[in-house]
Structures are given as structure tokens and as C-alpha cells.
Image (tube, rainbow, N blue to C red; front, side, top):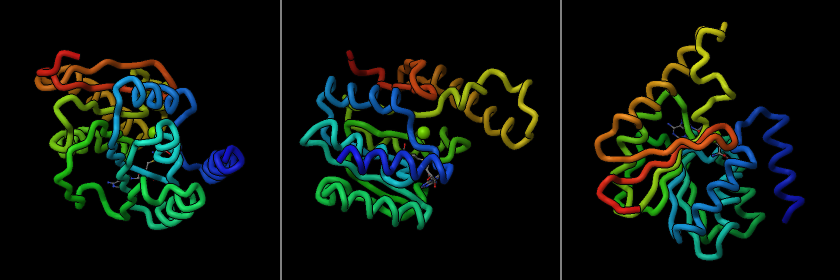
Length: 197
Ligand code: SAH
Ligand code: MG
């Protein structure tokens, strides 16, 4: 099992696939156990690393995950199969904006295109259970967030500005309270305001 996990981490590294950092996934695993999370919707599977790690954190967690890139999707399917998690992880090869789902989830993990974070949040908040949480990864974007003046590449600068806008959007949000955690590449945890936790 550990060998397979190491394989995934190595594959991601040499192929520049931005899988979640160890500190970040450990934070999410803790939240899953702390809050007794049973079902998860993940936006952005890549090769299935975070979905598999979340699944392994607890025996009765099930995950639906979405990946638009066909090669990454195929690889994720292979890994899910190797871990024998086919019955607990459902993966769809579709653009998140074309994906329709009426189910409610305890955790929604947003980790797809960073420039679209506000749109993902607005679309998928409807799939959240009343006591559920939304977790967003890469809120610091390699330490570039709040340092846009130092970014030379125009596209990167624009992307980082979008993440900054997302942070403002979360801070000003009327429906959700968000806490920002300086773990991994930065994690935001959002909870509906009507809930006491
Ligand atoms: N959660 C993964 C990493 C995801 S990387 C992990 O930590 O292991 C982000 C992924 O989101 C990429 O593979 C990219 O192809 C996918 N993605 C980006 N925009 C998307 C969209 N609109 N719909 C579906 N997948 C998307
Ligand atoms: Mg990420």
C-alpha cells in the first residue's frame, strides 16, 4: 500500500501534477475524523491521490470525484483499482461545470482550476449538507498570494489575483464563515453560518 502511495507521489512529481502536500492532506484527514464525515465531493481528482488518501483515512467514507483531463482520469481509475477502492470512489471524466448532482455531501473539496474558485464555490455549495464543510486547497499558491508585485509572469500574476479575489469573496461571504489555515499550500475551511459549529 505504502509503495503504491510513494509511486503516486513520485509520478506526480516527475510529471508536474500538483497533488496536495502532505500537511494539507493530513489536515483534511483530521477533519474527516473529527467531524465524522461520510461522503465527499471532490472537484479536481488529477491522478486520484487526494481521493485515495481521504478514503484511506476512514473505513466508511465514500467519495465522488471529478476530473476533466482524460489522461489523468484514466490514471486515477487505474490507481483506484489498484487500491481496491472502486466501490468507495466514483470518478467522472467531465468538466465540473457540466456535472450535475443532486446529492448532498458532508465535505466538498475544491481543488480544480484556481481561477474558477468562486464559480466552483457558488455551484457546489448547493450540494452541501447543512452541517457540511467546504475545503479549498492552494489558498497561498506557493507563497505568491499577497505578493503579486513580485510575480514577473503576467498569467501567473492574474491567476494569483483571482485567488486573492476568492479569499476576499470568502471573507465577505454572507452565508459562510471561513477560517484560513497556514498548512501545506494554504487551506480554507468554510462552514455555513446558520450552524453552531
Ligand atoms: N486533488 C488532486 C489534485 C488536483 S490538481 C490531489 O490533490 O491529488 C487539479 C485538477 O483539476 C487537474 O487535474 C485539472 O485537470 C482538474 N480541473 C481543472 N479544472 C477542472 C474543471 N473545470 N472540471 C474538472 N476538472 C478540472
Ligand atoms: Mg491542490
